[in-house]
Length: 330
Image (cartoon, rainbow, N blue to C red; front, side, top):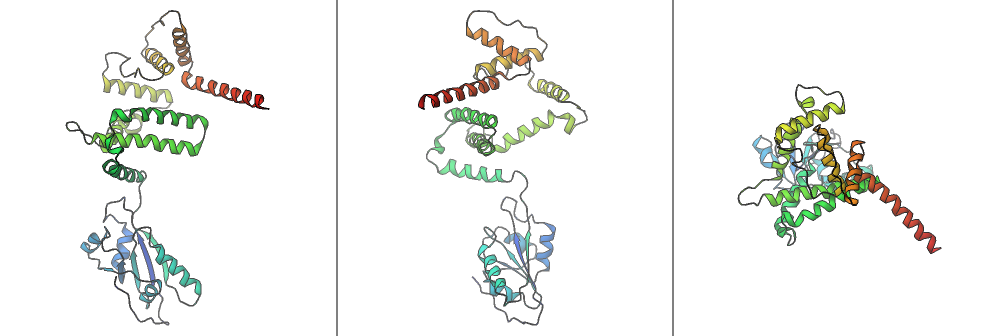
């Protein structure tokens, strides 16, 4: 690296150091207007990393960037005479340099220039999803286990993670909820990554995201269109109408997965029939199955999720079992 040399003048103005940080999640060259202003006005622009992704764009815009890795003392000297020096940060924001400047300032023996941290580009909401996609790409390419997985092989994990997410919600554990949401998100990204490799009908995570964005916009005309909705019931009516237009199903039972838990399946079928205004008597027969079907339909009509209700009751039963075990142990 090139060293910075200058002759300090104690009587001169102390100048200014600007640490310019950028996000790797934003395309290089897309910098804020204040960042471009300070870059054009600076007396010197320094960067320790000659391969920094911003450098070609800075130079194309007419900014002379020196590849240099100054010490704190050298950087202070370079600001002598009121000069402004911009340091284009690399990695985590040049911690060694900023620590050195802090130690130098702490001695009280040096007139320190003004210090400024200027974020030149910012992460937008959801930016970390880009990191997840990149990590998944590398894992898929390099991990012996992940590289061999298929949609069918991963299906059981999707079910497990969904149940664990529901449990975290019902338990009210915020830390667990955040972790389980991440696990569910991983399943989505993993499946989308596998789908990219399909020889005839590939699609990517961007296609997945684009599809759900289009669906949400279409099903919320009261938000993105001219329609209005003043109540949750109005919203549900919009949703059902636009969904029916999209699917054009021949039966209200289409799209109801038969592989879901029995109580949830029964409640969903009862909901579809009730929403469609169909008066379909429940089948009669002997056995627990028909009794559970009737209970699930009754719960759905009352606005109760039978699966959630049964899980809540099961938790109470579990606690009673634990209490009984504790009494026996005393």
